Image (cartoon, rainbow, N blue to C red; front, top):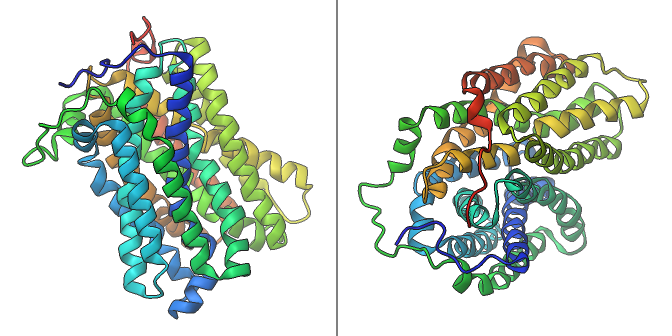
Length: 412
């Protein structure tokens, strides 16, 4: 059985519980990915590594996420979307516990496991979101779920360092593992209600690349994937180098620079919900994505004027606009992928598209580093990187005008 709409009547209470559950899984998945970076000084000191080396664990995690995306749609169909989310939470719990072992090999194994879990969450969540969404609110619902990413970053940044300082860095990892366990158990009541369409007969042998094959066969999905690759690269570069820019070039103290990063994160949350609401209101996700990324280009170019002594309100205002657009695009994007997916193949389409998106995540910081090496200035490097956002807008222009429309509600 593989009918995506094989569910009980979707009541508002069940829809709210489902959205809350998958958002919570997204929060803990992102939180887990960022906890090692949040406690990097303590972790690096124990392992005898340069602090900068810890940063490479994020790239390793996204290698795992990319690998998992190849099979995530199949896992979702075989286990059920709720069980797939629970499996991701279990892998997070296990991986964080492994990283708590003070050894470089444990860091590598656990980090790769976190990536596997992260790659499993989005296709399963997309499948569930399509069950509770209608044509009138699909973009907003997907955007609410995608707020789990910046919120997970906020949780990692606010919770992990204080625990590491007070009790030791291992306890920050174990606290994250405990939270993953709580979420895994909390979403269990959704299992019998939302996993009635799972297909235990789903085969993996010879089918792992079918999700990517789906991407290759559908022109508009390919164009969306190319767009996502570019936008993800810019997003990760912004998240990875904003503090360095603020501290080293704008000459802000580290605490204030950290506040700047928090401004970007909060703007990302507001942007994801706001753009989702706009896309539903105008009924055109494609146009909404284009407008949001034009703002990202303008904010990136405006970053070049930042200099020491400028008013904080102006600095943070530019960063807010940058975060609202360069971090806030994901929800509308994921909703559009789900809308374009063939019936019953939302998880597969999402998994296929996320392969190039995760590649963008991996190359973004590397590309920015190369630009910075050539220019020697962070602010100007962000302006130059805006060219990549322009490259991401072009595929959205190529997709026909009707591709972004929502001509009729999705039947639940």
